[in-house]
Image (cartoon, rainbow, N blue to C red):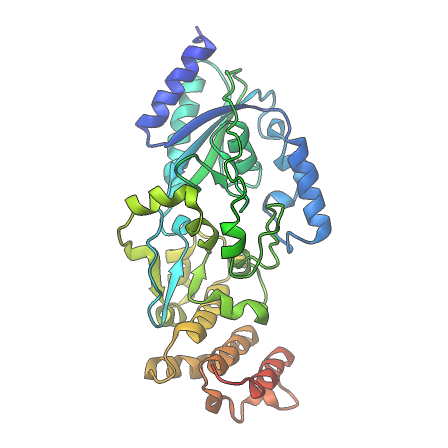
Length: 371
């Protein structure tokens, strides 16, 4: 015999606490028509910068019924990711965004599966989706009363900010829905002003063409105009969250150092493909090709490395002669950024058979003034 909807909801909420979820809410499973329209608009405007994910098929990603036939409710869960300490990046080291330092999604999915199993006990169908292109997770969280849409496009949980990963259980059980949380940003513009590339637009939409978190995931070359702003980042960018006053209490509470918060650029550049994918393979790495991690590391080395350090010079020389022209081009930029144009004299790509992208980097390095 199935439990009454309100009793079942109470059980699910209590289970959520037991399995480590920090918030649980329920939303109706009607299609997110307004979100679908917005995804289509942003894609048409080029704001997605070629990003796929939920942009790939907006009709699918905004309709929970495509995930589970007969879906009537979304049980949305949030699991906390410790907020990072505000520390300067030391020479030659690279920062990793807070959500990517450990596999928080694995713990989130595990907790949501417990909720799904409870629904199945009563004979309901249930499917877990988290970090999945099949559903717009932030829209589901807003509808489920987990938090509100922040101006930085993240979901902000009252008093706690956006230091969470989100996921849902799609079910055909009809459950009482949660009240939505009213907007709490007001006139605050700290995320807009704090974004190092101006990627957050006045309407709270992120222009992925300028967003560092996307640029380190995107294939191809990192645009020159954003390389210095990338600083010492290997993966992700937390700047718009770090300046947000809503998450300030979380930052104070989490004032501990995480060994997974950064990594040496040279260690990444020296590592073999299988080593890099074993360590970072849970991330979205373009084309599942570790060359893009090395690309990011070369930019970070140019921004944070020491021009006089023999290890840095050795690594630059290695990549200036690398077989991959993408990496040679970024090595040219890194050497120039560090003021080591002496390493670029007589570079083979200056010749008539040189790679065009590398040759252009060499040409631009000739006119660069200082690191």
